Image 1 (cartoon, rainbow, N blue to C red):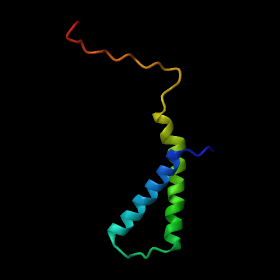
Image 2 (cartoon, rainbow, N blue to C red):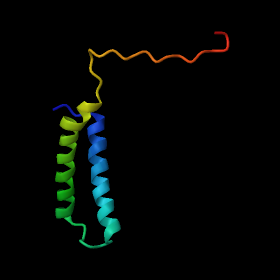
Image 3 (cartoon, rainbow, N blue to C red):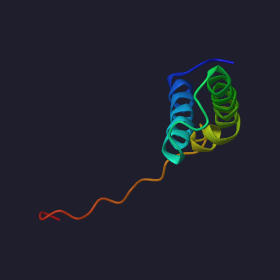
Image 4 (tube, rainbow, N blue to C red):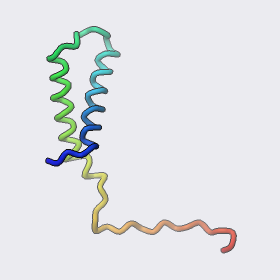
Length: 78
């Protein structure tokens, strides 16, 4: 598996979303301890792997597919 910058961004984003959701829901409950950080890390790692193998390939254009030409709007001289 080759790591790319987008993988780090997905991991940090997922970790941050879970951390902020927990903090905003009930500040201080449950206490942020090593178990909570490890749980968030494992879930973030799992989501990053899922994103890399199932979601990200949907956004990569096919190499054999040609992009259609976009029509240019007429200019004043045409």
